[in-house]
Length: 307
Ligand SMILES: NCCCCC[C@@H](C[SeH])C(=O)O
Ligand SMILES: [Zn+2]
Ligand SMILES: [Zn+2]
Ligand SMILES: [Zn+2]
Image (cartoon, rainbow, N blue to C red):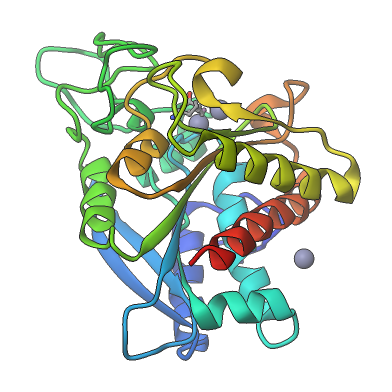
């Protein structure tokens, strides 16, 4: 296996070894749990960051790698864990965050797809599930959640890149995550899902043009988070509801989490705006992750203030 690097796009085997070593070398701050397997049988391994306490703490759920080709996304989740562990005890905000809350990090959601994009097709997006009756493979996990499922901005054609699946949560990866969040919904206060590319900070809804009940608060937090991000290297972000800011898209994880009651639900579209697109060079991993840390910490601080 290759050596793990925070400034490289690590393969799944390397990420899994990293998960295991991170958890075993920081037992007081980190634990790991497998929330289920993927279609091809890989373990969906969730990291839980936070000072251990006997009781259930309020938490933030952060996932990366829903879409296979968006390699900067899993790179960010690994970076977040590094920063959290590195700065706990020295950075007052991170210390307070991990003392008061837990942060669940799912470094790679769509592991099968991520692996396939490393070995076979760099531009793969979906899962790798097989639907009987079609020669085409995979469902778009971000159209497979039970939120306006398959009504707009999704396709019922298995060969489409935005195939919504045979039913909501037909994808075992989606069901595993949805089950975990449902089970912990009373304590999960924020849901952050990381994608690329376009430099956007999106929030519900994408399944309709209707504004979320918490639209004004979600918007002002998004604007503050984007401004924090921009302050580092000048990277420009656009904030807004998914439907009007990017496109109508039903079945998304953010809309589903929001309607479940997770108020602070955001989708990040990281760098860039199309010059490299999904093929963001490894030289941009560090700056992208450092600026994104500022946005995530801004949101986390707002969540903490509103506990
Ligand atoms: N819930 C949909 C949020 C807006 C669309 C996000 C992008 C990320 Se590649 C998509 O799933 O098409
Ligand atoms: Zn995506
Ligand atoms: Zn995207
Ligand atoms: Zn840093």
